[in-house]
Image 1: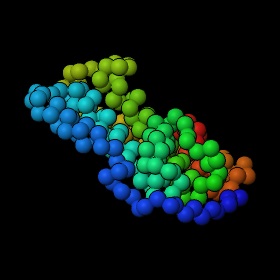
Image 2: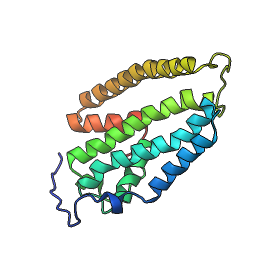
Image 3: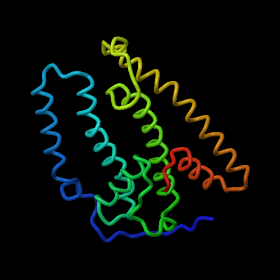
Length: 196
């Protein structure tokens, strides 16, 4: 059974100037300069350049609910927790996560679950394409339309499998006697191998 705790934060409402890291603007400007300096940029290099920006933006946006809930003292701590969930590492800054509200627990579990799916896409599509794992045939992926179709095919094939495995895990946990909410959160953590 979950115990609900009301937390009242003494800090002011979200202040983007203080809370977002000032280097974010610098990073975006450098990324833009990099893209302009390489007019014949290949898709492989574009993916390698864009991935960190995408991860950073996703981390910052997904940290907002954690920060605004008042459970984290700084936006950096909430961002760390968010990145930990999205990368499915399971490292947490919280010494007592059981004090979180159910909505915060569900958000952390959802971050892990989405991160687990993202990791599958990364390992099965992006890393082999850029030559870090597996092999690919560059002649099959010579134009951008084929590359987009390959990504779409990977996403569309993996998503139903990920959902079915998640559903089976949820049903198994629920039938074993866990409450509905616990079954859902444990499913998201188990399938993604996250650890929250």
